[in-house]
Amino acid sequence: MFNKISSFLFFTLLCVVVSTSQLNAQNNQYLIFEDETLVKGDSCLSNRSDYSKFRLDYVNDSTLVKNLQIIVGANYKSEYFSSVEQFNIFDFKFWLLSNDSYKSNGDLELKITYRVKNKLMERVFSICLTYVDPNPIDRGANTPDFVKLPIYFGTDRNYIKSKDLNDTFGIKRSKLKYGIVEVSIPHDHRVGEIESPAIWKFEFTEDPKKHMMLQKISLLEKNEFFDKLSKDIEESEKKSTFLFVHGYNTSFSEAAKRTAQISYDLKFDGKAVFYSWPSQASTFRYGKDEENIAWSQSNMQRFLEDYLSKSQAEEIYLVAHSMGNRGLTHAIVQVMKNHPDLRNKIKEIILAAPDIDADVFKNEIAPQMVAETKKPITLYVSADDLALKASKLLHGNPRAGDAGEKMVIVDGVETIDASGIDTSFLSHSYFADTNSIISDIFDIIQSGQRALDRKRLSLIKLKNNIFYWKVKQ
Image (cartoon, rainbow, N blue to C red; front, side, top):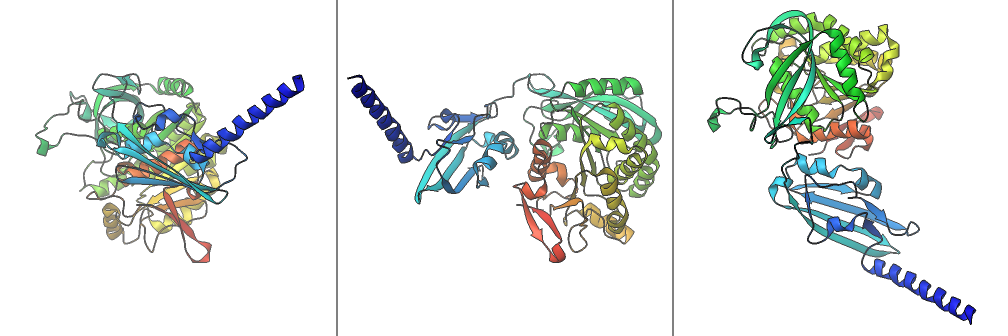
């Protein structure tokens, strides 16, 4: 009798398992979300939602799923995935924020197709998107209308006593100084933008509710600066930091805001630092900027050496733009030659639109950087950069940030062609102004993926096994 009951229970259990498996197959659920409530018909996602379980998983690991295709669309943008792994590592929250999907009052469209035993399976979802005002405790020190970010800086500009914080540091050369500037960012900030007053909007003064602003500047002694920086970095999850060196035609205030914007848009966990050399902040003072970036190289080298050795960071990203590349690349090579032990601190070097002679960069600077640092180097170039076109006319030689026939391609450097993605007047600040480049840099920092594995890039092969990458439009 006991054996009959046992057999009956086993058979019943087996039937339940089989019928459940068949039901899942009938409902196209060989692939399911870790939290299926996120994709129910009445579900909505917001900028405050938890996306940690917006991930796919196999119902049965033994089921052979073939020809998987996942298409995701929102606000006229789309992404494609061919594996569960690709889908699960993608940062959907950042992507939706970067293309303003939450504020478009649209839907997140999701289509999953695959084959199991030659049978086509399909799941389609339409999930509403909503925008929720950020929680005040989310980033930095906050008020109901804006967030404040502390940004560390080093500068060899002259100090000016001024009621306007934008004028605290001028355009003249001076001794190296250290400090922290507090930058506010409005809660309705758009990725890639530095919000500022616009005359056509009848805005004549800065308003922290609408514009990025400097809220406070504190000068520190050198030891105090690095002690505080190292303690703040220690509190970050990855113990990380990045150093940004601005380019030509940039004021201290503009450099501070740009650094804050990059840090905020990248959702950078560590501490942001920038170095501000005495650019004249004028389109017509290019020659003086060239003289000053050359003069500033020794100061920048000392600052970089201290930054690498005293910040106690485990992951350091070095980023330069335009003419700032002249100072940073020189400083990197010299510091690495003098202190090769510091190379282990560097995680990645990102050079955006370098205003450097292309031949000098290709034959001298890049090979030295590759040999001395032994770290990944990413070079962003563009054929649309009017500032570099003007520099080329002035110097008579192509620039390292140019794309086209004279594009710089060097072993050990990943060249990314960003032509066609920036429609601004000069197209010179595309690395921080455009969502696609910000997203690509985000992928570098968050996942450490090389160009070959980053979905936003297409591999372009030339003859003789020479290749570079193009940003998808």
